[in-house]
Amino acid sequence: MSSVTDPTASGPPLSKTAYVLERLRREIADGLIKPGTSLRQTDVAKRYGVSPTPVREAFRLLEAEGALKYESHRGATVKDMSPQEIEDLHLLRSEVEGLATALAVERMEDAALDRIRAAHQDLNDAIEAGDESRLPVLNRALHFAIYEAGSSLVALQAASLWAFVPPRMTIWKDEKNAQSLSDDHRRIIDALERGDPYDARRSMTEHILHAARLRRNTPPPA
Image 1 (cartoon, one colour):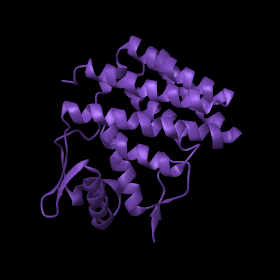
Image 2 (cartoon, rainbow, N blue to C red):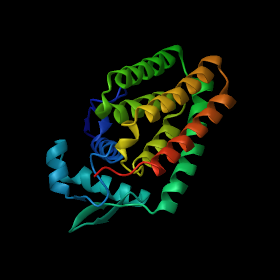
Image 3 (cartoon, rainbow, N blue to C red):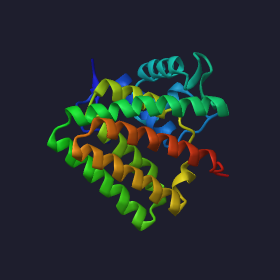
Image 4 (spheres, rainbow, N blue to C red):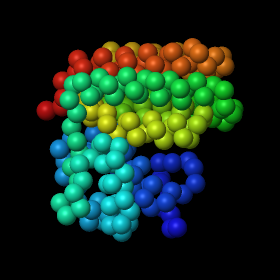
């Protein structure tokens, strides 16, 4: 099977389908592809530098997850979510990502903890610099540095849920919100450093629900 290298990843090369799937998930989660956007196989294939076949396979996988509505002759549309579905999504995320964090405490090596600390510092530096456009991407990098330190399988499930997160990038434009979320991250990392899986899980669960409350109170970008 041919493969490509994801420039944002630190692991081995991905299959072409996995590469397209992960890149679509990231672009949806980061708000680069918004709900209601129509995606055509040929356009995505050209932009990602692959043939239409892995794009079609990725569309079908995202449809099975519920992130897209896909019709083979009309392309795919990114689905929007009702308020109830968004609330349920964050409840599910809090459980999955809490588990991923607890597993990270139990399984991570020193190098993984160093990557987590570095990702946290990068995010804090961007907050201090007022670099709003980079904050959602750096936030994701920190979260997945934690999850991938524990279980690649659970991290993959978390990634599929992030594709559903409404692209409310304005959550990071409020300085108070950004600092509050960074304080959450500090508590999570403190628990990781102490080797306390129970507190790490609780802290991550509370953080996800805290972010959900902020999103509910943040208007979508115009």
